[in-house]
Amino acid sequence: MSLDLAFGIARSGLLTTQRSLAQVAQNLANASTEGYTRKAGDTISVSHANSPMGVRMGAAQRSVDAALIAERHARAGEAAGAAVRERLLSGIEAAHGQPGDGQSIGDRLGALRASVIGLRASPGEPGLQREFLQAAHDLALSFNDIAGAIGDARQQAQDGIQEEVSRINAGLREVAQLTTAIQRDRVLGIATGDLEDKRDLALGRLSESLPLRTLPQSDGGLILVTKGGLGLPLDPDKDAFSTAAAALGPEAFFGAGGTLPGVMLGGVDVTRQLGGGRLGEYVALRDTTLPRYQAELDLAAAHLASRMEGQGLRLFTAPSGTVPDVTLAYSNPAAGLMGFANSIRVNPAVAADPTLLRDGTHAVADTPGGPTAFTPNPATGPAGFTLMLDRVLNHALGDTVRAGTAWAALPSGGLGPDGSLTSPFLPPRSLEDYAAVVTGAHTADRAAATAARERAEGLRRGLDARFQRESGVDSDAEMAAMVQLQNAYAANARVMSTAQQMWDTLLNMVR
Image (cartoon, rainbow, N blue to C red):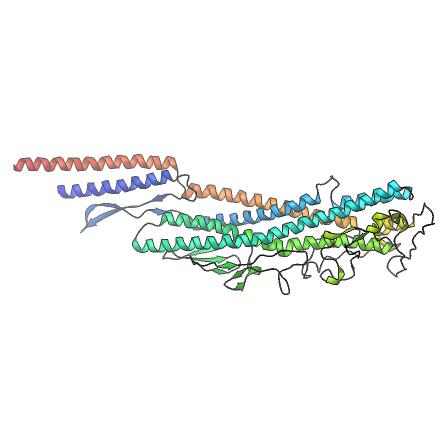
């Protein structure tokens, strides 16, 4: 081997080792940088005519498991969606009250029943009449508070849709910009590992809003497909999605004839095709879960008012003084059911004259299969009149509309402003049982959301740890590699030094 060749090989070794050391130093410096993956370049032998000419370092590459990254993103989307559901339903659970604190509508109905029983023992006692009246006020306020919490959560869901659409548009623009940079650098032969790390990080954030499937292309490009099969455009200068603001009331709904805005992709409504992540969860809460909650609460309040009315006591009314018609469909505006829980109140006439709780407010005609006839206690009637109170206890708050005839079960289908929703339980006949079931169903949804979030976060943490082991920077391993590279650098330096000394010796001999 000539001295020139030895000198060249050693020089290439020094350059390659120097570049490898620089890459190790970069890995160590970014060990705690979010999304950074370990980079390394292969050492490539260079030869000519089967004669070794030295070595060179290939482009720094990252070693990642694409399937593992996709799974991490999927779990991140699940956790983010469950966290949204948990947060919005927590406010409704708080309005329902905790078990045993006496704040739920079931507890309030029980308190109302107890006050009726107390008044029946002494119907003419003003203090007991006021207790009955106060129990009715408390029950109406509980309906108002829970309905208000449902409305607040639904408005938050609508506002959240807007926020997520903006976040998704920003994320898609970021991914588009990074993809363009990756494609450009690949054409120029520049390593793109750092840009790919940033793109994966951006895709991870994007997947929390809208679960995606990524299809990498050979030129560094990327095709994004949503869980619902929608292909997403990557344009760094243009928003992909759009929606609009809206103020929600109990009657608002999305769909044919509705007033709520959809989520548009390229001018096409894709709201029904969005699932998972924060955006999909906001849509599900706004259009399905919370309208159903509202309807179930409205039915409980409306049937309470209607059953009292049917027995001769107009105790609960809308602000207009009317009582809902529970024989009509929930979605029929003429029924007065939608939003009744928001506005239910104690009849001002009863509040002004609590003796009506004992005497009744109006006469009732006998109805086949319905309430029996009732005549209110006249002003000159007995102070110990109990017929009205018995009708409230046995029928309005009981299981039967009249002796031997059970109440029909409350509706489980045809719910929501458009009549498309269904309760996930079989409604009982009594109001107290129905209220307990509604409270249990609503609060169980929050508990399920918490469990789903914790499960998804646990899986994500496990995947993150595996990803870190496989693709992250191991500081100990990098330090060991640095020692090896330093030894290699020193060896190549000695070869060059020896070759230089030999050259000097030869030159001196010539002289």
